[in-house]
Length: 111
Ligand code: HEC
Image (tube, rainbow, N blue to C red; front, side, top):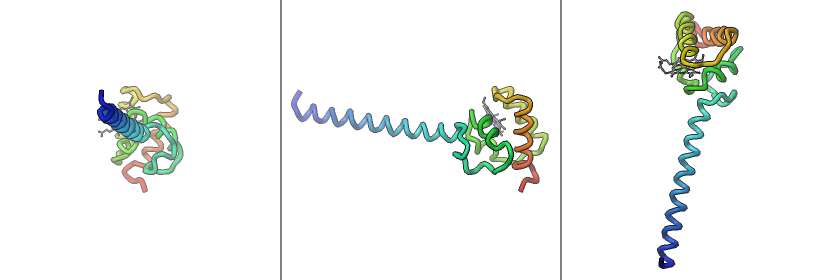
């Protein structure tokens, strides 16, 4: 191989490495948003049990998705039961606390 060609393919390799790295970083940012990191989500209202909700309900989808809509007490109850069926890991007590938080912060008459 001629020296120029070697240089060119080296540059090409570096280039694809850079693209791969940027892709990985972007994927990580997306994962971060749904990962349970208290403080990482500014949009979730303050309140008792906020951290628990973030931890349990932020596993499979961004927490923003969870609170995109207000729901009645019954709807939250059903939703939590549905998510537990889907695999959300929470004890009865934790489910109660999540329910309390969601109804208080994201119920029909929430502030
Ligand atoms: C094991 C994974 C998993 C966990 C943990 C989880 N969910 Fe979900 N959630 C899903 C899936 C899958 C969907 C999308 C399916 C759907 O739209 O019905 C979804 C959708 C939703 C939606 C949107 C429903 C709609 O109609 O727009 C809400 C609200 C929600 N989840 C609330 C919660 C709450 C509250 C928790 C914590 C108790 C939680 N999720 C935890 C899997 C999960």
